[in-house]
Image (cartoon, rainbow, N blue to C red; front, side):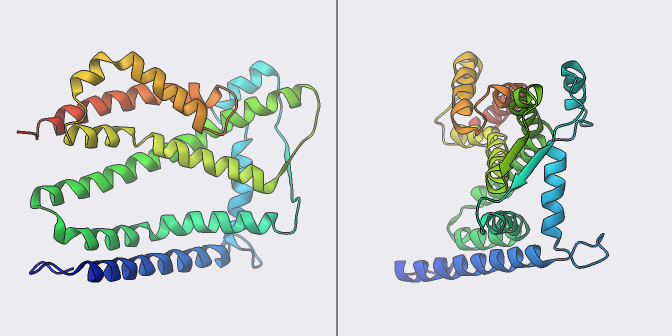
Length: 268
């Protein structure tokens, strides 16, 4: 896109498609690299993605987790064993592709962000340019924080309580490898997006759609609505995830209020 003159719509579309092509190629290359990169701790060739799969399964059921240890002591549970099986030839391949794509997106995300920014930058005003970079950084930090919180708190708690009835009755836990990892990844992404809630509030305040007074006065209603949405979108059929997210929600809500006050003041 040119800053000197307005380009025809066709040229904008061509440039957009070209940048999308570059972004897609970067994701594909990163995903392939992740899927074949060797595990440096292994004495023989073993793709790192396999070690990641093993680590995720261990972390989700590790009763040495400070969050799970007190609960395990209360319920008298020594360990949580989950056996993963493949229902079809492609189950394991689907998981490898899913994880490789996920890590590929993470690795290539800076390049993708640059392609998007380079495309929209000529059409932005100076004030908007000063806001977009902090917004992207804030989104990355909040989303990453949500994923970390989900990985070490929400998902292990959810799996523990979902497994509790089977462990107490002595029933062996056997799950499809595809279902298990889809459950984990879906939970991580949803919680990560949930943590970006303050940025949504900031944008609404910036657009003068939502005022900080509304956040202060309608806290109870908003809290209830968010919990209902979480109960619907999270893959956990129990209220465990919802309860685990209620505490960080209070922190995020207060941050949202501060951002609403800050960005709401720009309107003159």
